[in-house]
Image 1 (tube, one colour):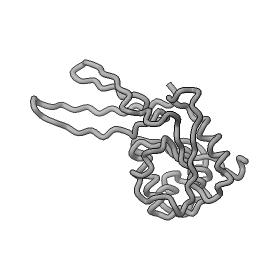
Image 2: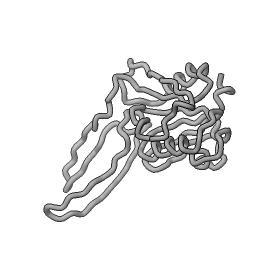
Image 3: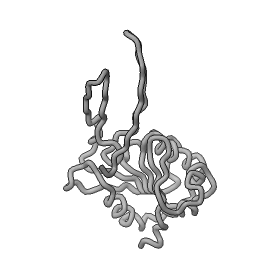
Image 4: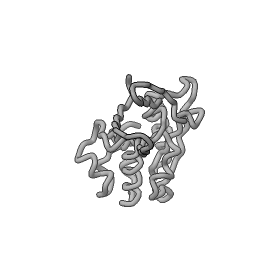
Length: 178
């Protein structure tokens, strides 16, 4: 199905042994349910993916007049939310974007305006968010300043880049989409 992501981890453990696994960030846009198979028995869990009533996106950019376009782009993504739930987009000027990726985990997706002057630590935070299972759409990624996020696109201006447990999506410039 569209929007599904398959992550497989296999372990062999003896009696009384323990193990820790890292799972992708729970979001109905990326990971809707967890299928756990232990000794041939399957269990399915929504793993708290519906933490919001509607999908919530973060628009990162200094041209806040582009926020309605960002809302339209994010709302067009396939979603495990109720079809009647309208996406909410929060605008974040570049100067306010945190350099800690964990502060972005409350959002189902990020849309980054490539024209934004993201500092290297901010690009690294977005990269880590995606690596942990997040979804980030980047408009005109070649316009980003040099940094870890821009380097992941390797000159591509369109298409999907798998990174860790998440995905980056290269999109055309917001200015050309208006």
